[in-house]
Image (cartoon, rainbow over all chains, first blue to last red; front, side, top):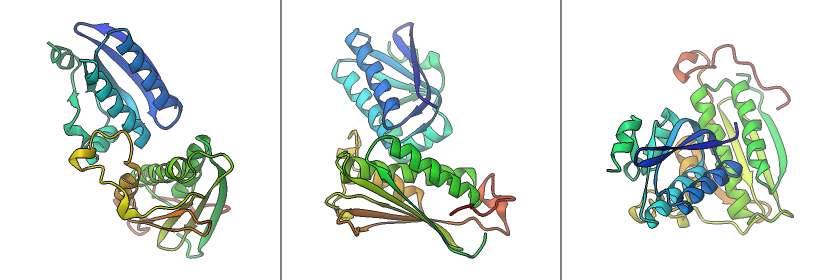
Length: 114
Length: 161
């Protein structure tokens, strides 16, 4: 399934709801475009809701890392919300689970930006 | 699982679409061979990463070069070969993506994932001069299909492989 991305403003951050696969090609490109667009729009506090993302390849992982470092470079932060088991396991395997701030509740993710 | 070895080969263009095509093809073979859902995910991801490696690093995304994919099904395992037409590389030269200094790298995790997801993994010099990734997954035990997750029961050998 191709990746879809919508975003909404919520309290201190912008929540990006993603669904589909983040893989080489359109999926990774859409994530990159979405994050760059938000950062250009000065929305530097971002929560990526991955509840409906059950497949990420190495290209998608690279794009998540890029989004994280780019947001930080602009003085912001990017946090992850609602990891599916496959994505959770993949981030643990690649040791990125300790790099990203990961949340299971949206309210907790949003209040972390205070 | 039948004991007759089966072989399938396909030549892919150096383009992004080949990644999905290769994954889908190998997933069909894996499902038909009786692999469960979790193993199919690992096999599919490994094929994907192997072809991405050939597409990007091996063939440098040059469209005149090809990617050669082969699948062998023996009585014991599913063996996948991904051959590119690049300059080749040495496995020991690939940086460790788990090293502290590489954790925030935006690339370089494909080999690591293939190693983690498959039972056997190696890179050898290919007949075209490029690199040939050879990786294998042991077939699920037929007498105890429940140990490999869903999908093992009632599996039939792949057709046309």
